[in-house]
Length: 88
Image (tube, rainbow, N blue to C red):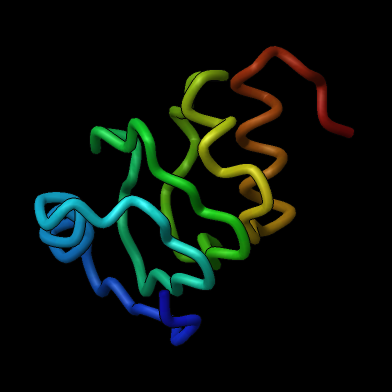
């Protein structure tokens, strides 16, 4: 598999990759998008840059899919707050 980054400009572009059976999004760079309503079961996002994506409504099960992904401090705070942590 190529290590060349794939850029998905929108969630629709990600849906296209998903419909083609692509599940290993290593070094993927997202330009924007809300990933919370997509079926990402079986996907891996190690080293994927998700800083431009909406991730605030992730379940614990979904969060595991993003292990090793790059997120911003703000996203981390939103996710942890959603899981019931107090972020100070």
